[in-house]
Image 1: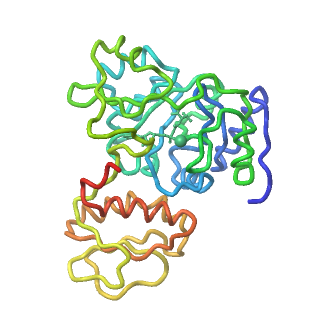
Image 2 (image 1 turned 120 degrees about the vertical axis):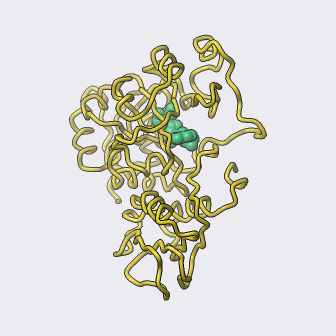
Length: 323
Ligand code: TXA
Ligand code: MG
């Protein structure tokens, strides 16, 4: 895409943003923390476009943004403590990692195939937009991978302007850093990412202390223990399938050998389609009962880099997954 994104003031942006979202295009929107690059969280194709626009080298799970607690409850199971935190701090810079409900229509590319989902209810324009859209919006920070998060529309446009169509201008974001991410697990409250809501404020409402996952120094966002790990072992970049193996294929040509089960990420070799299929297909092959999932080579260009990153993480020994 060589066109330049249109920058529209938020007072005029609801209709054009809804139209873009309905068409599956990512839209940069202001939230109280940082600008987000938002897309329909229920559409794998739309979410794949977020990763494409960010040139994200890996598929980290994304936050699903909801308009309120009621929308959140359609997609996740809230324990009593998480509910109390949502009631105290939503809308606001707090993200809750919760068990995903099986009925949730949020796409597996958002949750990276995990049984959990990260939910946040943002303030302001984003909240009105989600309510009008009627579905959650997946939205990582609106910056190219590896760059700092954008806190103004001009910053977003300078970075992503040639790769997206619409930037909604809500001025400078008041909080300026990403949301705080917490998770209730085994009666403990874990701080997964420090952010725009102070730990002390959370502790005051929770009545218990936050625990920091130990053994880690500074934890880069997205580097948390949040990686899909299949039960089966994996062989990547195979040139043939061995007896008993399941095959994760890519493209029109098959490697030699007969697989016990086959899923093709994209018969036509489309990397965006492959991205939307990745987690669901890995899961189906894992459930097929095969001990080993053989994976055909996936080209390392475009979204292929992120696909290969996730495949490598899924294939890595478990103690490798935290880095
Ligand atoms: O303030 C924010 O949170 C901004 C604005 C746009 O809302 N969004 C944001 O999204 O920072 P993103 O994609 O850059 O960060 C999402 C973080 C990642 O570090 C990811 O690993 C974590 O949330 N995450 C998402 N789902 C998770 C899950 N199920 N379990 C653990 N961590 C999860
Ligand atoms: Mg980010």
